[in-house]
Length: 632
Ligand SMILES: [Zn+2]
Image (tube, rainbow, N blue to C red; front, side, top):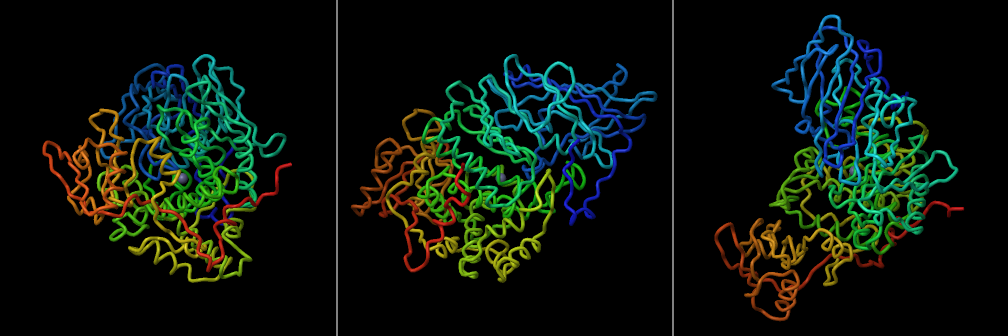
């Protein structure tokens, strides 16, 4: 049995109750043999004593930072006791909760239901692969100390499919794979990746703890990983240890799903990560650039997000998965993870030093064009994360999005540079990582923190008014572009006509074209597909030339200077306008009306880059360079 144990400092705050009404393990059998049809069959037996009982579907999912438990897709629910139907009633004001009465004489409830999956969901599937996240395929009794409930999980897969998970193998003889019993908390933290085309790479052969990269793809070709990429991910494991100094897991499994029919995403766990990317991410250079630092980001979360977690996000530990969360500190949880994920991407060789810097430039350029920074503090994007994850693209610049990821990366770069300056280069944010996220290490544990804890830990590394520093950049409205960390690192944000490779690759993969820094628009489609959606303007930046000329999001760009829209044609129009004085004429379709917007812009193509400022030491290069001793 493995429970995430509590670190000593927090133990008094987070005493777990006991699930005294339930002694035996809950049996949870998931049949994924129908996964190619996106349906998962569930049988669950919950020990129970007679009387009223509430069964709940996990609502606030760790790492999701919101009430996203996909209750809508739980279907076919039937509850019985000793073979007799037991009626259930959903709570009218809490729709993830079902009230039942366990009949006299019964010692358990038998549940049968299905989960119907989507491409976007955390339990998902294609004809060739599946990912099972247990919180989508369970109900659990709402009892004191529910997190200590023991589950005996099993999983039946389509014939011939392989699988991987951080769950330990069990001894059962059931129909399918049986796992050792675990607590509710550990089960929810332990997804399973399975597929017909499956590959496992041992990243630390013969070492403890073990690290594995498991790949399931929609084709045989997709799971072919090169020796060079294996070396990079081995390096990632070594660089993470060099950074943090200790690990908070007994084994680690990178689960990688490669499919064009599953949404690109990633979710962190203590002993694994659930990474999803395009089918050709390991074999196509542009797709690999878009995959980028996904695995390093999710891996960093094992330290920053799972082990160290904002106190407001410890649902699933202090209580259960039903109470609301306070996500204000996501600029640490996600923002610092973005920073370390990209830094480790540089140190391990996932990205070249040039691409590491280019990524910083692109983030800076994008954040400078978030018009909503004039009214909305960065902290508010974290507080409202559960809303903003689902924000529409239209007027996103004015609304702001989940900026606590990219903008916080720039803030943490500034923290790193301030520490280096104040200590004459003797210390860096690596020292904070060691102190805050490091020793003692061992089995999965959770050590919650507050804003004051972060400030105090930084103070111990390099004395500074850190509370005031974060107040100005995070808590208050900060209208100025967040370039100070870059400048303090010996670089300047400049704009030029050369399209960054990351932007070009992103356009190729997403079919969304970037005129963000020139006209202030992004356009879906390059104008060649003939689809009705080709040329839709996804967003405009208020105050930028296209917006000033009357262009709005969701309008369709029909023609540029009298010719049918194409991305290439619009680039040519930018070049022509730079050489002359005539405005760029954009014919746009606004539902059923057409109008011509004359954009008085003559700045040509514009993309952000970093330029060296020789008056200051270059900190970006050492920050993004390998630290761990070379592999033997
Ligand atoms: Zn994350």
